Image 1: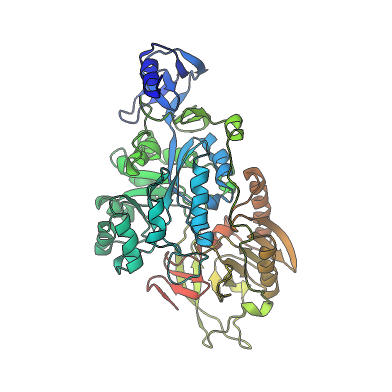
Image 2: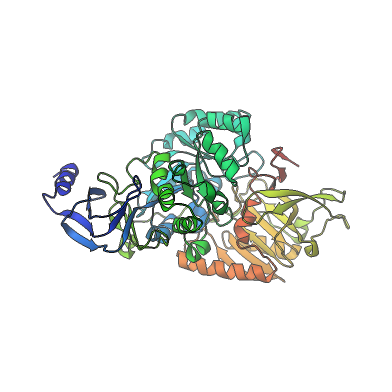
Length: 564
């Protein structure tokens, strides 16, 4: 029989369904009702609800609640520091059955090879992994990335069955100024989904950005910013990552009235936070605890997300839709005891049965040889110095000005004032640039921390109070194919190798979690008070987020969109 014939017969009860979830209560995201019902499944589709069914296989869900699988509407899997397969094993059992990823982290290292790696992986994961094609490789002209992708590079992949559209259009000044490269990409993907990225943009400039065809956006950090975007027809993605934590600020706008136009996303979330708090499940229970109506929260987590990104085959527990279902004990606690993705039970057997894809972009760190002298800061003789000011829990930074007097042709780090050196070392082997500056907010008193996770160009970012330790940290990253390292007094205290493009580990997420715990402890021993110092460091190098950032080409005044 054809799949269609089988679905019809199983829906009518003429033959037993392949699988029946018995006795649970369906949470209907249209009416808000909780109703006891069997759920009959044929292959990867739901075929029956609100009736009694017999199944070839039956699972007793008595006393539990069935909700549609969750959809993460925007994330970079690379920021989980594990491969797509380990990410799948990490978050699918938490109820995440669809993830819409932008692989622009790996694309900035190795170009189309990285995007194709994710596309190949997406057909093998238990979750339904979808891809938005990276629109900003590099994100601006003010950095050196490992690759450059134009419209002509992306168009051949536009009709791939796993591709939704164009990923976050980060270069919003380029859109407003009608940069030819930006215009070519927008025109090439006109009529398809285009994801947005426009922090603090408002007024007529926001109108122009939306008029360019950009439909969704995840950078709102205040209710006022989010509401302006909603009023102008944008669907707002409420974000809770490891550094960018906007959920608490935006919780007041999530109501049953607004929920059809709000979604949830994690953007960048690492295994520490996933293991200790959760993923979208953490967002759901936290939003409900903050007073958001459960119906609004669960809509944002699935149905609204499906509608926003054109995934018409999911988002409800209803006949004909994908069998993406999380079985939870309670709406408020949102802890899944059983998860189905496309009718497949997400258990150890399902993960073990997957084919995998060989890793790409090995040995990708080609940084210049550095010495302690490489980190001297002698670009100016004036005492007034621009300083990047960290805002904990935000990727927006302050543009500070501090008085740092030059001594012997160098402005030295001053840990007593929380003023330490930051440097970016080009690591793609293209020009060997090294840029230096100052940052305030790490609390670092000695040593150095360094990383090849450095948004979005992914050069080496290093922060330190001691030049010799900074040089050792950068050198060590080359030896381990990239990753994270903490150094003090000439010794490596902790490290995490990330040999896949300098971004992802080949270890399990449990191993990565343990290494991250060691790194956090080591960083704290140097005085670092930030909860997530490595991702915070990475975002100090992203020149499309206000206000002051640094790349391998120097300090960037994001408000003026210019190098200082």
